[in-house]
Length: 376
Image 1: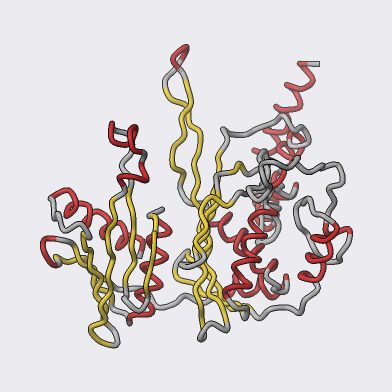
Image 2: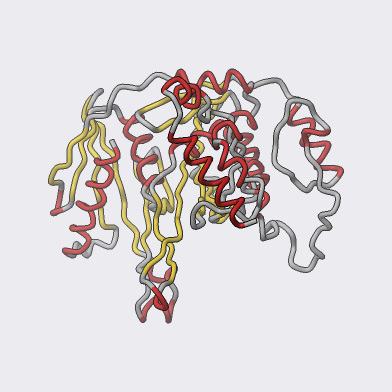
């Protein structure tokens, strides 16, 4: 039996090496396209919803179903709902289609939907839960929610796997790599006087890697490079969930035109802190800073568009103070303040609220603003 399997593997690799150019071109045409990959976080769900009171028994899961069996043209992961929730979801799905417009700047995409922020907030939270995520952070006042990490095992079409990998994929025990986990941050901003919403979604990933060798070999978790294709797939799914037409949403993402490239410079600011100068108006700069802070996993504690400020917090990792009081007790807060100089020029300042003005804080201001500038 071992010889048969070995021979089969050899033949597959031999045939793969003998493909003609026309055959390879045919395979290239069958690559994964937007909407082909089914995001499969829910099947790996291992925790219950935070909204279940601790004194109640966990719900019974045998009666899980697919919404696609109840409502046509819906392709969602398995979700567990009560009869009341079933009715609410059917009503939500059967509502008229939303008008959605996709914006693009480099690899970054976001969209504007004709629903009020309150509605988009509730639907986005439900969307993430149905994907299997627990909402780790939720601040409706500033319009930001963040999930925990969850492993993703996407269902990839056989046409994109190739003959050999498609054969192996039939076995659930087959794995091509060490696991990776993802978390998502959704940011919702009011648009058009609050009648519409601007929706941003960002992915952040970790991967397990091997270190050492032999009996000293072990695995650790490291930050993983952003998977733009997966982020786009998730954005596409959210667009459809919010009422976007499948075909129109896909077309909007693919055909989105690039916005003008952002021009900015890193300069010396006030009191020894760094300063950013954007060649853009206040609203555009505000949006870019909000996105950049989210992209860098900087905790936005508060924001005030009238005051033109973001408030970010940092908690030191480890140390005796952390072990005694906890990270929350010794958080350090900073202010990121914007000032529009003209129609096409806005400055961004870094302020230390504590006014200690120590050298480490000044160095951090340059490090942070440099990382922001690199994103553009």
